[in-house]
Amino acid sequence: MGFDQSTAHRVWLEIDLDILADNFRKIKSAVAPCKVIAVLKANAYGLGVKRIANALVNAGASGFGVAELREALELAETGVPVQILGNVLESEISTAVQQNIVLPICDLRTAQLINDEAAKQNKIAECHFLVDTGMGRLGIQCDEAFDVIKEAIKLPHIKCTGIYSHFPVAYSEGSDYTLKQVNTFKALLAELKSESIEFETVHVANSDAVNNFEFTYEAPFNAVRTGINLHGSFDPEGKRTLDVEPVLTLKTKLASVRTLPAGTSIGYGLTCKLEKDTVVGTIAAGYADGLPLALSNKGHVLINNQPCRILGRVSMDYTTVSLEEAPGAQCGDDVICLGGSGEHAISVEDWAEIKNTHAYEIICSFGTRVERRYLTKSNK
Image (tube, rainbow, N blue to C red; front, top):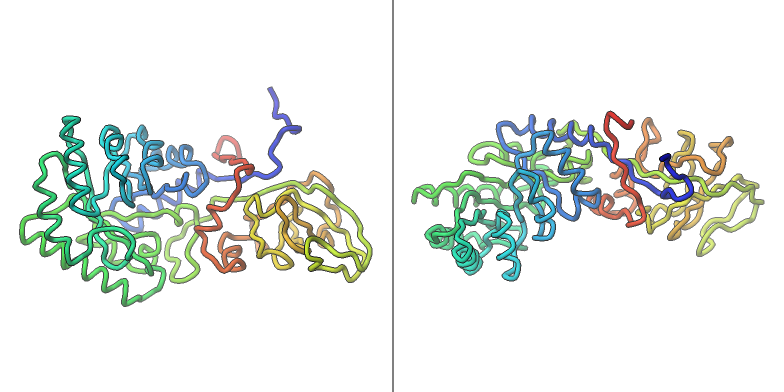
C-alpha cells in the first residue's frame, strides 16, 4: 500500500541514524579506553528513544543513562545496563529492582530502602553512588560521602559497582570550578581506596567535559556520559573537539504562495510591513512545532536550497516568509526549517543563539504533531 499524502504529517523531523551511530563511534574513539554511557533521557531528547537506542546498541553502546524510572523501563530490554542518573523515589524502588535497573544512591536512607526491597525479592540490586561535588542538585554531599559510602557498602543486598558526579559549568573552557570539582572527587576516591573501597565504573564527564577537559576521561575515570554530542550539537561556549555531525533536519511544506502589495502588514502584532510588492509564502509550521518565536523577523528557512527570510511574527501553526530569493517556489514544495547544507544551513546552535538558550532546549522542543522519520542507508 502506497504512502497516503492526504494524511501525511505537514511537519516532520528527519533523524539520520547512520550519522548518529557514526557520532557515537567518534566519541567512543576519542575517549578510549573509557566506556560510553549514552544519555537518552526525555525520550532521547524528544527524538524517539526506541529507535535511537537500537541504533546505539548496534554501534556498541555499553549502557544508557536516563532521568527517571519510566524512561528506564522503556530501555530495560535492550540488553545493556540502564542507569537512572538522577534520583529514585521510594515508590519506584520495587519496580526498579524487579527490572534490574541500575539505581542511584543519593543518601543512606535510599540505600537502605533499596537493600530492603532487594532482600524481599531475593535479589542483589546494582547501584552507583552519586556524589555532589558542586552541582548543588542531587547526590551525597562530598564531605559526607566517605561515611555514607562506607555504611552503604555493608548492606548485603546491594552491589555498588559505580560512583559518579556531575558538572554545572564544564562548557566553560579552563573553568577553575570544574577543576576544583575533579580534584575534590579524586580526593574522595583516594580516601575510599585507602579503605580498599573501589568501583568498577567511575564517571564524571558529560558532553561538555569531553570537549573541554581531557583529564575527565583519563584514570581514575573509566566511563563518560554523552547526550547532546550524539546529535552533533554542542553548548554555545567552550571547545568543539569532537568531529560530530548534525543528525536532525526539520521539514515542512509550503502552504501558500501570494504576491502582496507594498504596505501590507504581516502577522500578529503587525511587526512587519512590506516596503514593496513581494512574493510571500506561508509555511505549515510554527512555534507549536518547535520553531522559536525568537525567529520572528530574524531567521530564515530554505526553499529550493535558497534562504527565505522570515517575515513578521512566528505564529503557532504557520510562519510567513519572503520568496524573493526562491522565485520558482510552489505550494507543496519542501521547506527546510532546520538543517540543510552549505553556507545557508541552519544549525541547532543558530536557533539557540537567536533564542538566547542552548542546544538542549531546541532539540527537546519539537511538538507532538511533528512526525519523527528515521533515515538509514536503506531509505535515504
